[in-house]
Length: 333
Image (tube, rainbow, N blue to C red):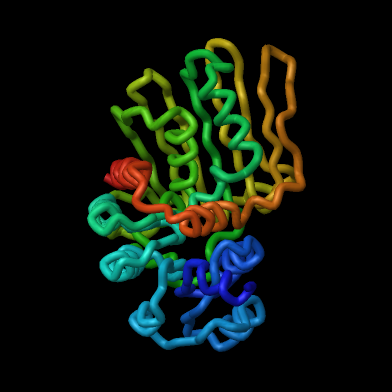
């Protein structure tokens, strides 16, 4: 009976099984929602570690060979430059997609993928993982329920004292941008998602590379950016993100919301990339909503796998991916 049950589970492949892809594979395997039947990665070491998690999977040498395994779903963890193209190829063969962020380097790339998912009626997910932290989930619930009243100010920060270790991140043609594309995408998504995706009416941005102001994307990738978004609700959103900032710790991460009835904040603990607290405020009083530990890293992937196992198809919520990408384009304009 167990063998029959395994065959009934959706067949999923992994394109890219480096650290992030392997982490998401581990979470999905542990969830037991799908069966991992194939993987593809040019690194022999990465493949060996991935096969230890899914020993029954077949290792192949190309995306086409992976799709030829008869997949129901594909998890993509490859360089940003190829996300849109690889997602399109999978969707056009009737395969659901879960992709690392960004889904595309520009809003038109993201639009093409979302349109393909709609046309093929296939499930589409992107690993905007901070939505799935316990702290942000609880803040989202409180804010949507009106606990803060009218939210008029948002402050978003993501400073990474290190920066990426792969050369393609520093090529604007491959990455689509620098710290805004890598880190700012999470901040924009958290602000819009938490507030119910209001219209973004105006954007102003300053981007820098080693202290030098940048104009167009083609000039180079930014390692520091500061921006202001004015929303249709009247709210003002302040955003700052960076790579290799001398912050005195590994990371500074915050999403704070202030309204007419109170405030709320999601903040990392002691410079950690993984540990967060969430609080709501009334004047000088504080109510703590969540504390570490919180194993949130693979939750977005597991949520996608669970929906796939339940027969999930295209969800109009995927249109919000275009909203985030459009805002990012405006930050680079």
